[in-house]
Length: 253
Image 1 (spheres, rainbow, N blue to C red):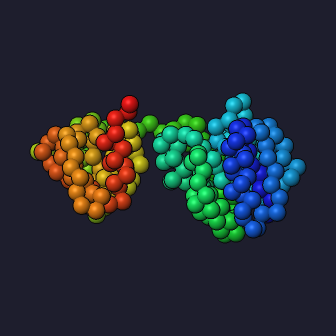
Image 2: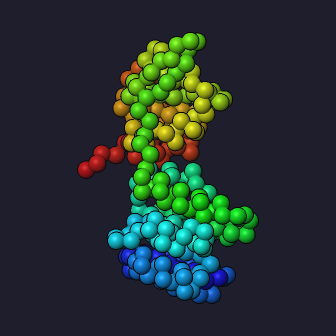
């Protein structure tokens, strides 16, 4: 397997090369310092896999894909230091990614996923997914600002800033605003993907809270937390969400 590493940072390329060299199926590694070199090497060397940095000066990852042509691109693992909007775009895509600094465990998982996908991919779907992914990063979707809630013949428009917390109820979401609740026919995961991650935090598989509405926290057993909101509601976090909540307990100085 021939692998091309594309990154404008020498130390980043060196770190990725060390990870790639540990894969027994890799017998050749080439490097590109920028987008122009990447395009030339993809055309000349025909690598089986490209580890492509998304954010590069002059010619970024999107420009590389456009120059080569999505249908002619080999398998790709994207590498990014982008914020959580980019990560969310990656997570809803079938194309894999690595977040800088790249860890060995995450690299191995991404490497194996791409190997499986290159064996099972049909038609040019991966190419369309690749271009769509990069476009979503270059032009990230704006987070949701309001909800349209149907109630009989009436449609209520609710500003997202008015929401205290959201609760999953099967394929519905119960929206809590003070003492009033509304029911919206949408899965919680879908709604979460449209929310601003700087404003809303998932603390449980069934709960998302507006961080501006959090009054105080208590440590509970097994790494969980009790989250009290300004409304007086108290929610118990899930164990797997503890690290997200711990970030809130640290001052930025």
